[in-house]
Image (cartoon, rainbow, N blue to C red; front, side):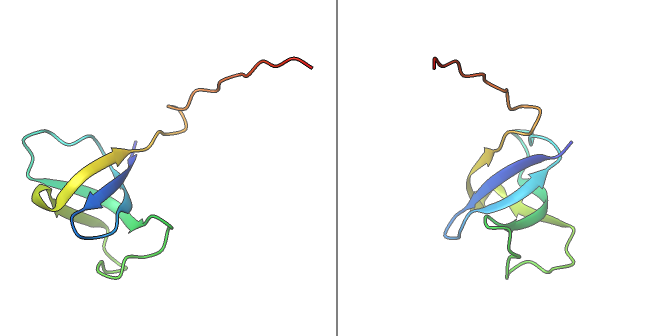
Length: 81
């Protein structure tokens, strides 16, 4: 199952992508698929036919993980009429 992440690259706009698993702390790079801009448009610096992109960790500020559908919990709100 793919994990959707927002990758914040130094001196560039953040991008949206999927990773297969949380990377090991000793890894030197992050492998992601379906890299795109946060609004869903193609990135100009990645070829359209590329299937995977490898970013070295020294170029990444931080990575945010987004909740999947099964991670989201339905919260019922109670209110009085």
